[in-house]
Image 1: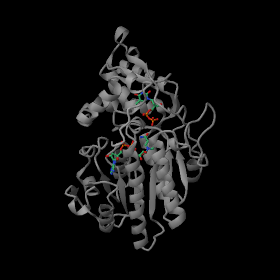
Image 2: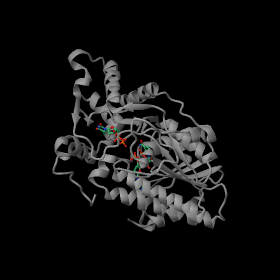
Image 3: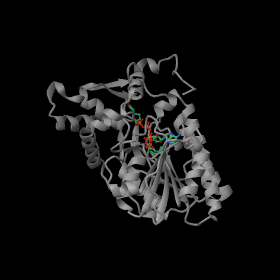
Image 4: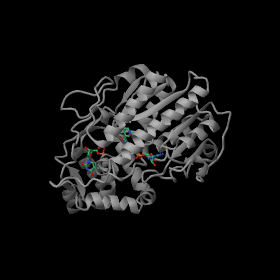
Length: 389
Ligand code: NAD
Ligand code: TYD
């Protein structure tokens, strides 16, 4: 990790001391971070944002190319690592942040199975470092009451549900994958910093998001693009695993509510109240895109579906009870799944340039490695793990 002094990638755009809120967003060039920043720039004209992102394979530096010149003045991009304490200290001293929204993470379960170490590094060590520098900043500022550390986490920390029941904020942690284990560990550090040092930290545990700018390794964008390109559609196991889908803008609105009204030391579960089996999602995407592209008969996309070996440790069902955030903060999802999935499909159809830009050599290699010979990867000789990834 390079120190901040050596960091030559800081792009200073504008620091406006008159802004009402100054927010450090980590991982703001990834899927949810991008949507969050774009949303905040639109709805909070007196907020100033610094986006700290390492630009791993999942981060795209061009996600803000089309924002207005006025918005550009309220957004600064810093390429850097959340594990770089010196860089974080420098950013805190420059901007006197009121809030940290910590999105940066390794986020893909399949990648965590193949290379768990990166998840330990970024999700645990990274969160630990951001927490430490946030605490130092908060204490130096005289512990202002309005400061917030918001940790963006996942419902996957709770493990797998059977056919009945929902995850509440009281559900015991029971992570199954290296990804969810690393997110669970980071959540525990956040809780410890609240209890031990009183850092005004809040955790949100959200269900699966979908929408524009999602890297095409996750179920929905992967299937959309494979359908468009008439590639095979790999459905894991029997395809009956269930996720509770939330449109990303609904998630962004929930995060805003938590920043403005959330109580430190609390966890808020965020869900879409929209459970679907994977196979139903794939069918729906096939049918919508076929209609959009005028495909029929032998050309219909359902024929591309291939059931492949299951993901090891594959959680069967996630479903969120979001009563608490609805009752206490007045948030509920605005988008219906049927409506927002069409917005998402249209976005991918209209933004193939973006798709091509994120499909770097690394991405193509990953897709080949995963889907070139899927049966082999999860064969009885075990998973190829690369602990040095
Ligand atoms: P993503 O993989 O699309 O983006 C992650 C971003 O973090 C990328 O821009 C990447 O460059 C950056 N990053 C990675 N390592 C970094 C490092 N060491 N330093 C600085 N930046 C780094 O992820 P996402 O889907 O946008 O998820 C964002 C957060 O939300 C994650 O913490 C994830 O666990 C959580 N979450 C995601 C979902 C979902 O459905 N995508 C659901 C619930 C919670
Ligand atoms: P994913 O988008 O990776 O999110 P998560 O594992 O964090 O929930 O996967 C969503 C569901 O889709 C999950 O049950 C695994 C399944 N899946 C497939 O069946 N095929 C695929 O190619 C992918 C990426 C996921």
